[in-house]
Figure (cartoon, rainbow, N blue to C red):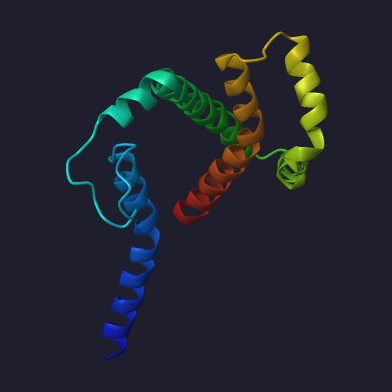
Amino acid sequence: MKRVFRILIQFSIGLLFAVPFYLLISLASKTPSDMSSMWVPAMYWNTNNFMAAWEKAHIGRALLNTTIITTGTVIIIVLVGSLASYPLARRPHRLNRAVSMILVSCLVVPPLTVLVPLYKFIVDIKGLNTRWAMILILVTFQLPLSIFFVHQLSTDTTNRIG
């Protein structure tokens, strides 16, 4: 009985999340003259709305930009984060604890507190509306977290093995 109730709750939550997507697809596939209810699916599939949105909103360029920015950011964060965290975890030094505390303190600072100086900096280096500036910003804000996670993983693995 308890398992059936849990499955029913999970199904209800899944349905609650699926309804907006159904409505989005249902309304997007209708013609402008179709005045039927939004809950009723279209009588025939109209792809003109999708093609118009793709062309007018430049979705292809947005997907390309998203792919380039995401790929570049992830590659840089993984490479630099692992290279920076390895010495912290494997080489004992008296400054390691201080560097770790600085990294954790970087995680505590809200990004909104540096928004105006960051914008001014990006304007000064002529990085407004460029992919490389977006990658730089994302790497800057995510790198401390990456270094912290990889450092903790390396330290934990070292302690378990040795």
